Length: 543
Image 1 (cartoon, rainbow, N blue to C red):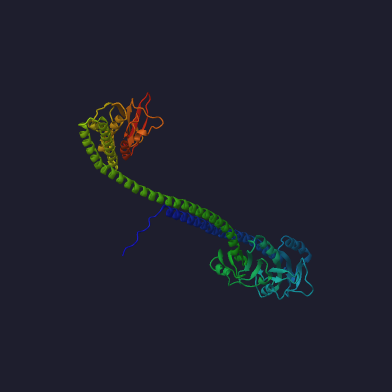
Image 2: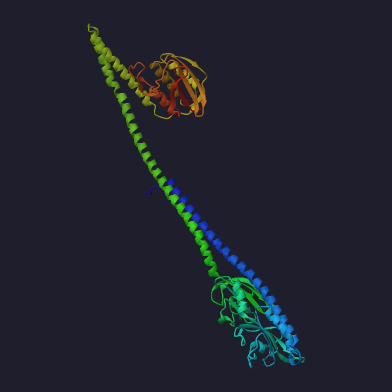
């Protein structure tokens, strides 16, 4: 079983592969940029949450410290007889200062042992309205000491959401004498949180450590206040560390959030800062769309450039294949023409010999007769046959040189001496030392022989000058003839296979054979007028 040969890889295939690689590189680079920007934006938001949590931790700690100190001072002031102040009016400036100094303080109150108000600023409750049923009052009555942070409630005086902070008041004998309390305006706290939360869907929440109850939250959702979220991710993370960050679905609204938290243990609260994951991702998608849009444009440009370049290369490959095919056809045609010329040059020799033999017989016959005109005809016939035979011989010599020249060192002086020895008519040469070149010694000798013979047939005297000089392409050999003139209108006339002489006589072999030998050596031959008259013939040979 035979398998088909694999198609060779073409330049157009390489262009497509390179273009595809560039497109993939662009897509990969911009995808990486989009991914990197995502991580950077998430990291930036997480750092922002951490800083905000630290700021709010310090704010809460300071405010709660101030509230605890205020309650302690007030308790000392009201711990008189039966827990009642000796002069309530003397406390009003103090209360006004405490309430007016902070927008979050909704009021300060002193309740007796039955939960009825003894002192209230700035608002007084309606008659018979007390707080005996409030959890902070019950905790103090049951013996809780220290500042108590109660549950969020709706004030019976103002009708707004408040967060009570209270402290037990005792008689000198330690019996329960009532409560001093400071109520914080939850809406004022929410306004602060609202000003710093990440928009549009970020959240800030304050929770009680003991049971996870929501004390305040922005955005403000009244239904969430007073509920416990001890089973949520915030308190799960609190078990591991009192401060930190996490990315989880939160318990308050069921949304994926980036959260940072700080526990303030001495006040029994934890502050949580949460940014919406979807908000960050929405911002990232806008940036990613820009990156991917730029990447798509660049990828499209690279793809279009690849397509256009491939089309040009495919066209060139098609043209190259067409040229190669045409060159092959031309080579076959030239080979057929050369074969026909060889056959013609060879087979025409036999008829010419017959014609020449019969012409010689006629010449001997007419030699015995007194017919000068017939003898002239026979001489013309013999001369024409001889010239035709010479031309066929030259054609055979020209066609015989077909293959590339060798590449061995050839001393031109030795080749010239050998060529001069083969000439039928000697020549005189004013010569300078010639270099050694690389080529075929036999062909170079034939070059010199045919050069002198051809120039001699075209009227050049039998004296020449020859020299050689360096050229970037090799060695340039120059042959000078002072008597041979070049036709300025047709300086290449002598390079034909057969050329008419200067007197328009019968055609003689030209320099085509010489130029062919030089070209086979990778050089070139040209002719030009010499300064001061005459002709210079140059040819280049590799050094």
